[in-house]
Length: 209
Image 1 (cartoon, one colour):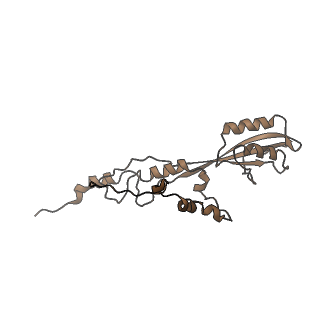
Image 2 (tube, one colour):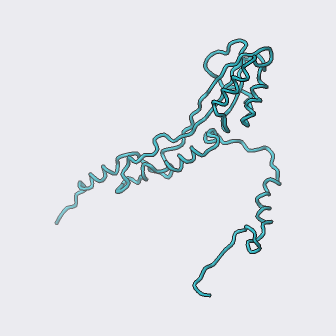
Image 3 (cartoon, one colour):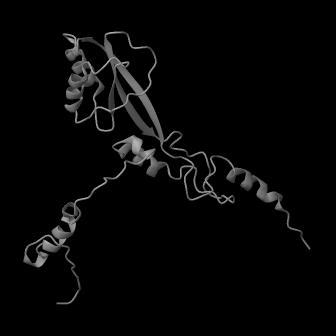
């Protein structure tokens, strides 16, 4: 009578335990949002920007390649609103509005200057792709080490505003029923495909005439 010994399974179990463990339906790799601050100090004259500073601002914003998701704020050090309108107008060329409150940045603002602060967020999934874990055989109830990397990496790449991954944008306090009904009315008013319209059409194919 022979006796079964589990020692033969030890190499297999050791191989299955190598690499990143994914024991649930949620991937261990999730999007990470990084926030960076970019600043530009501009000279002011009375209640406006000093001569030539508007051109500096325009060139700086162009080199930054401002886009949706960027946040622009003005920090005047509590000295007033000098140059705020000009800065807001330049940011408006990129479809951006000035934030009411500027983030805290390093360094003091010199008298007679204002600081333009651009906050930019970037989403990524560190560690992906990950093929460190052997998929078969695996007796530890783990999915592949790369599980979720494709989905979450695509999400991080496609999201327009990475800040929405941290905290979603609040909805509008009011809603227009006409806007909500546009899609429904478009479907109801569409001409059937039999009459040359674009509604969904069902077709059946068969071998007989």
